[in-house]
Amino acid sequence: QSPFVESGGGLVQPGGSLRLSCEASTVTLEYVSVGWFRQSPGKQREGISCVTALSGLAKYADSVKGRFTASRNNAENTVYLQMNSLKPEDTAIYYCAITSTDFTSACVMTAARDDSWGQGTQVTVSS
Image 1: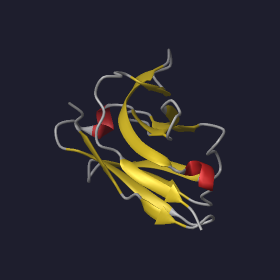
Image 2: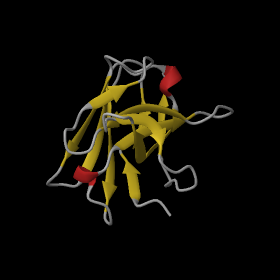
Image 3: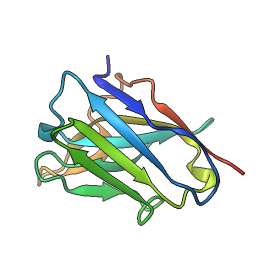
Image 4: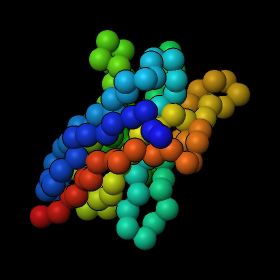
């Protein structure tokens, strides 16, 4: 079972903004790498961003680079995804999950486990 609860989604017009939250009650997010993933109808789930444990180094998929910003608030034990300049193709269910890391211990946009996902939060970009 996923330890995360995603929230903050909604309906927004193209060009608008939303901020998603990923809260955890049984995991200290400062010490794990956490990624944001999304899945549109008929498509595979894709990783779009991640925040590295401790350092907070963030990475982004090309499709969202320059528009989305991932961050972590240790005091709130929450990871955020600020989404600006939203496009209709950003419409999806958004999830967060613990990610794998590379040989430098930086996050990668691949879920550490593929069998434990939360409910996600729906983002719809439409006029």
